Length: 129
Image (cartoon, rainbow, N blue to C red):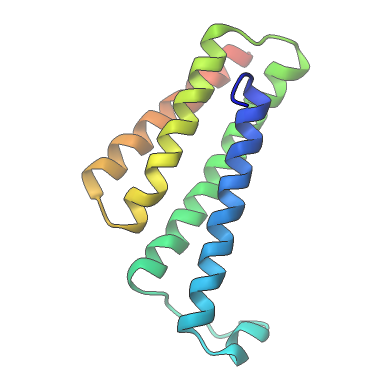
């Protein structure tokens, strides 16, 4: 399942989608249905775990947008290597830890794994060039 960079990208996309689903489910409990069905012109601040889940989702979407180009280039150019696979695996592991660390407010761990995932992303860009 995690034997190539494209599989890792797909798994991370699925994780991001599941986080979106969790956020929407949380909103069903905390925000009235009228607001959820509206155009949401009125901005409501999400607080606590739901607010952290929202921020983790935004960060995860940004990370997905950043990780996709080098992985796609590596796959299109057939440049997969042990180093690119390891970098993609580090990215995925870091992001899997990052999301609950953010949602549950574990600040030191959150920063550490975010940094690891970001550096893994940069390494993939260098490998893709």
